Image (cartoon, rainbow over all chains, first blue to last red; front, side, top):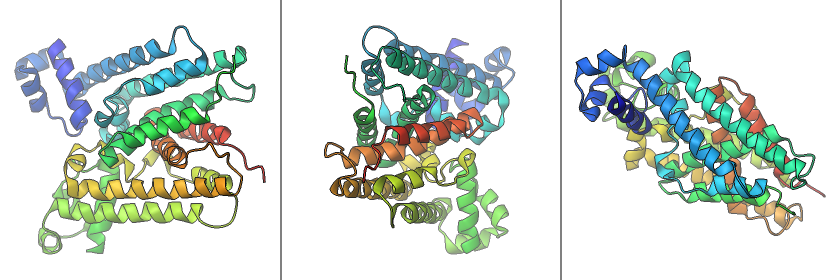
Length: 184
Length: 184
């Protein structure tokens, strides 16, 4: 079952939901049809488990950067600049291009919850920065949180288009240039 | 031939390349197999023509906002805030989630060229804003251009995840808040 979920995560990341067949999952997991349908009612239910797992991994990785010592801007910059396999794209974000994921409430839910959590967590860090006097009062935490999350997701799009991580890095550096610097 | 290209543009936007079969194109274009293969060697060649057309449309729409009167920041804000069918996503950007588009140099080229053009055009506007004294000298046009393009592409991702245009609008407003305001 663990191998089925892992293999589905990888296939969804690489090929998307529409491009992933039950046969491909069984092959990648080295599992028989019987084993797959013993654990999961079908491709959608297995995909749901895989997307939930990918969402949990994204949240854990983001939280590791956003929680802890350091100013709010240092933590946000650390999160933006953390090492990433840029050309692979985001394993959760890429699913929004999948019409069958977006059309199925069961499959869209873990995608929606992941980004809702991320924006909320980023907004908390911005709010901390305001309370500590690091950011000006005028900064809107919800807006800035959405901007930070969007720059990463859009950075992947630009990088995959270019076949190079350069536009991702430019976009991230541009945002860091625009964010107010910690003055204390 | 025009109908084949239009239908392919729509199907690529909605279903992506992997999710679009030659049969679906023929059905949407109300064209026979003979007509399709008379004009195009196959699905890839037709998709190339459709992606080139979508890229040209994206460039024309962006250029209409970025060229003309008004300060650089007003033009960039106008471009960011222009009315969009946010939940549909970007017809060019969404193709970067298509592994068969990214893996095929012929199909990736018009996607790459579109965003290269867009980032170059945005960088020109930022540079104009620096020359006119609107933006500080420290602003890096290439970085800011990539950030602007990324916020739009990532805004689509967040909106489709949420099933609502709200995160797109928050991300755009956050970026506008962060960009230096025109002081003259």
